Amino acid sequence: MSADPATVTLRQPLRWPSEGLSRIPVRIYSDAQVYRDEQDLLFRGPTWNYLGLAHEIPGEGDFLTSRIGDTPVVMMRAADGSVRALVNRCAHKGSLICYEPQGHSAHARLVCPYHNWIYDLDGKCLSVAFEKGIQGRGGMPEDFDRSQVTLRVLRVEVLHGLVFATFSDSVAPLRDYLGPEMLHHVERTLGGRTLKVLARYSHIMPNNWKLYIENSRDTYHPSLLHSFFATFKLNRLSADGGVQHDADSRHHLVFAKRHTDVGSAEYSSGTLRAMKTDYGLEDPSLIDQWIEFPDQITNSIQSLFPGFVLQQILNSIGTRQTHPIGVDKCELIWTLLGFEEDTPEQAEIRLKQSNLVGPHGFVSMEDGAIGGFVQRGVAGDPDIHALVEMGGRGVGTADNRATETSVRGFYKFYRELLHV
Ligand code: FES
Ligand SMILES: [Fe+2]
Image (cartoon, rainbow, N blue to C red):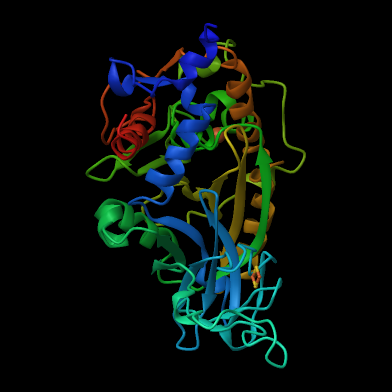
């Protein structure tokens, strides 16, 4: 019996198109083997993954759960004030240990809900309930060695309150992994002030996780997909802006200065779908902003490999983290931030501008849908390739945003990790 040709195609190892980084094989959005390789080689490989904010676990025993790829992870504040991260999976039968998104555990212990095995933050098993049985009957075998029962402890580093963890013993320290350009921007956005969490929410998107990450690095799309940006002149390609990379083009930063927009014939041609000449704002104060940073930048999106985004849209500052959920679904978690030092007027502006972002945001809502459009659009033809040649075929910093350099940069590191 001959094999179904479609099955044969899917079983072949992934081969990147010979054109290199200017092509993306769309099979990577739907192939189960690629997804498994990403778990092993990328998420559990030499990458730093964002877990949450240190401010979200202020006291000893406070915890926040997260994931690295599919693997459940918990971060908890230890008695010495440090932040620890462990795989959130009991060594007995694999139950989640911390099952709430956020909470507190007395004495900073991890107590499994199923049979109540207890662990400390070094991953050591402190107690196995009824280890010796009941009145000499039952219990674990004589040669059971509790010291061999451990939880996986991850390396952790904290950068201006952002907690990152890695499974890798060999990956460079976080600050070296990011490089000076990326560190400078995190410092510029979050440094020197006391963070305050304004809101945290998430939504599920109907697309592979990489489609959202590509979108966060796609500097070509904002004024073309988002009518709100183009129509109200918040972020157009005709304003001063550019793209910055680290030395290896793994990470990305796009920035723009709204007030320098000189306009372009394309925006006034009447052919761009995004431009709505008959739209106005009932309350124009929605887009009032104060120039918050000495660099005069009014929009910046920083995307750190693999799944973390730091946003500044006018004065709306926040983090986004992307978690895969199988090949064709992912979760996007948003945390909106303010600072203790904000004046009441500034705090009010940040709250008002939170209407721009999130799943229903005037700016961000299209991003929640467009990945699904691509996922549905490429269905049925796993051997076709996307064409990403805007701004050339290479990677690196650019003095403009009409480019896909950062999408190519993401896949440069991705291909190294997955050996494709
Ligand atoms: S699964 Fe955790 S104690 Fe049994
Ligand atoms: Fe967007």
